[in-house]
Image (cartoon, rainbow, N blue to C red):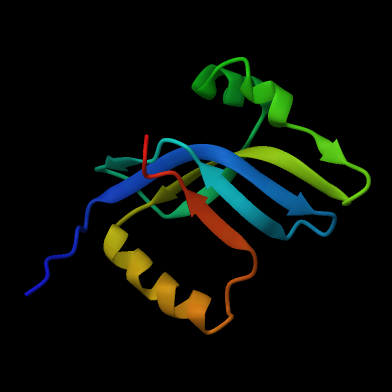
Amino acid sequence: MSTFVTTGARAIGLATLAADGTVLDSWFPAPELSEGIAASGSTRLTEAQAVAARGADVAKALTACAVRNTTVVAVRTEIKSLADAIGLGAQILAGQVRGRVVVDVNR
């Protein structure tokens, strides 16, 4: 019998946005398990908040690309319970989630 982790998780990362605000992809280099998250969701961070959380080099990645009509922004994503994320796999396979999410599990 499998046991699912039900603790929450949070991470600060980078998201590529299309001109209409659609998230095309996200990268979270150091996700962490966390207790006490009130609600699941994502928040866009200011450059100052991103630098405070991830270091000065992150500012270099926060750019717009006129050729692709995209912008890279810093985000904080929190998941109240990882049990809530189980349904996300089915939504991705059904084509109900646009873009992609990349999590670096090797850090």
